Amino acid sequence: MENKKVLAVYGGSFNPILNSHLTIAKSVLEEFKEVDKVVFVPVSGKYEKLSLIENKYRYEMIKLAISTTENLLVSDIEMKSEEQLHTIQTLNILKEQYKEYEIWFIMGTDNLKEFNTWMLPEELLKNFKIIVIERDADKLEDIICANSLLQKYKSNIKKISCKIQSNMSSTLVRNKIKNGESIAGLLPRSVEEYIEKNELYK
Image 1: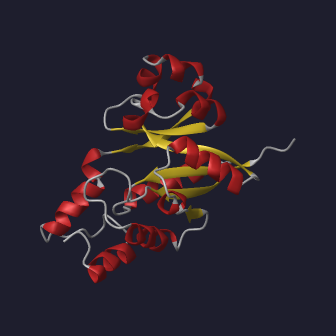
Image 2: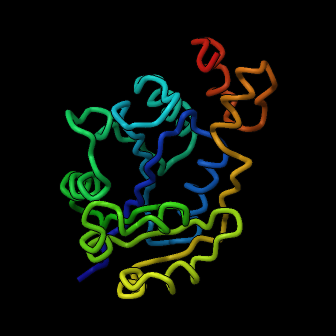
C-alpha cells in the first residue's frame, strides 16, 4: 500500500503568530519529505491563558502570515468547538477531516516533559507520530530516557533540528507593543500592520 501523505498539526495560542512559528512550520516541510502540509490550529479563547485576544484576531493574523506560503493551512476547529478540546480530540477530528493524510503532531520539549498529564497520552503516542522541537537547553533524548511511556513509543517521536528560544516569544512581542517599542522583523509585516490597524495588545 502506498504511504499516505502527512499533515503535520501545529497547535498553539499564536498570540500573535511570529516569524519563528513560520520558521518551524517551514522547517518541518523541508526536513520531513513525507510531510505535505502543516496546519496551524490556534487554541480557543476558552483556553485558560492570560492576555489571549479574541479568536477572530488570532485567526486572521495566521491567515495573513501564511497567505504567501504554499502548503501552510489554518484550522479553526478548536476555536469553533463548544467545549475546550484536548489535543487527542483535535487530532482525531482532523484524522476524519483529512482521511487521505496521516496525522503528525508538532510540539516543544516543554510540553513533552508534561506529556503524562495530557488526556490519553498513550493513545496519542500510539496513533500519531510526534515531531519535537527542543526548547532552550532541553535534550529530547534525556526527556525520553526519563519517561517509560515515551521510551515505549520512541519510534513515533521525531526530532527537528531547529530550536525554540524562550527569548523569542509572543509574550515578548506583546510587551514591546505595550511599551511602544518596535516589533519589526519579529513577525510578518502584514501581521504587524494588522496589529496596528486594530490597535491590538495596547
